[in-house]
Structures are given as C-alpha cells and as structure tokens.
Length: 216
Image 1: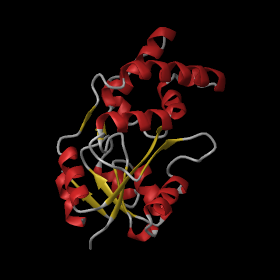
Image 2: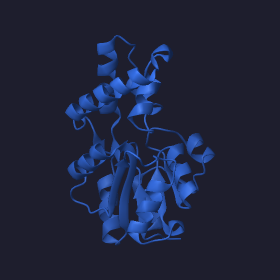
Image 3: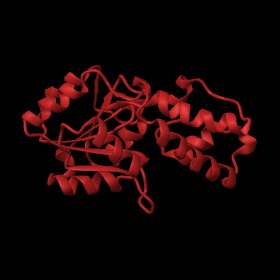
Image 4: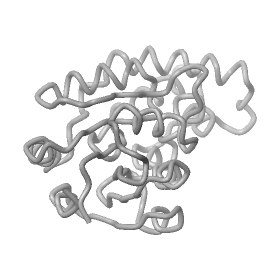
C-alpha cells in the first residue's frame, strides 16, 4: 500500500523540542517557587498544548484556572526566547522530507503547539521543504485528538481521509488519525512509547524516519 499524502505531528515526530520546552516551563516554576521537573518528565506533560502542560507541571493545589492562565502566558514568553536553543530535527528527518518531496508526496503538519510557534518553527527548521498546510493550536478550533484540524488538512491536500497517512509519536496522534478516518503510523523515537501507540490504534510502528518510505 502506498500513499500520496501525509500529515506529520511536529514535537516528538519531526522536531526534538523537549529541552527547550522543559527549560521554558521550569523557568516559570522556579520564579514562582514551585518544584521543577527533569526534562524526561516532560515527555508525559507535552502534547495537548500549553494549558495542559502548565496544569500537569503545577502542584495539585496550584492547579487553579487563574494560576494556570498566568503560567501559560509566562511559559509562552519564555519559550519565545529559547525555542531554537536546543531544538533540532531528529536524525533522518531532513532526508525523509527530501525523498518524500522527490516522490511528489503532499505533506502537511498538524500540532497542538500554539499556531504561531508552529508556523515560525516550521519556517525556521524546514524552510527547504514545501508543506501544503501547517496548522497549530488555534483559538476556537478544538485540538487533537479532535479530528477537525486533520480533516481541514485532508481537504486542503485534496485526498479523502482514508488515503492520508498520519504520522505521530503519541496516543493523541493515533487517536486523531482514527477519529479522522486516516491511517495511523506511530514513531518510536519520540516522546511516548510503543504501548501507548498501540493502545490508541497505531496500525504500524517505525523505528527510523527512513522506514516511512515503505508507504510512499
């Protein structure tokens, strides 16, 4: 089976953003006197946007709407200063994008990261490749695993959902693909693990970016 269209998740799939996100959020926690978390812990915090990230990082007693909102604003400001310090494409991703482009596969990106960060980071790290759509978290549009964003991209790509390969590193991504009627592929180099991917409906798992070429 081959596909002519693919949607990629961003964090944990194309880009290793863990250290910069952890540093941004930890700087907020430190300033407010809350306990910090090691970068590895952020693998379980990331994936549903900044409000969920802030909530998961805060002590339970501090998870109040007003405090979460303040921490989100502060974390975004901190992240704006440092999103490119340690973040890099995963090994093999540039080569994958070049080969899929050569094979005329239509490509897009869907993330729960705020839209402005998503667009800026894709332009910075992936300027050499064309994407039919780049969508992040937007006000008034439900984030993943709701299928709204994926279906919007499917229409832009000009392919029915069942003909689109959806590639991500988390259960949220696999659920998004299933909810949208797309074919889910889980990557094993990202923030989550094999069990979570399979439990949420991954049809296939890959260990290296080059492994994805089997479907193109």
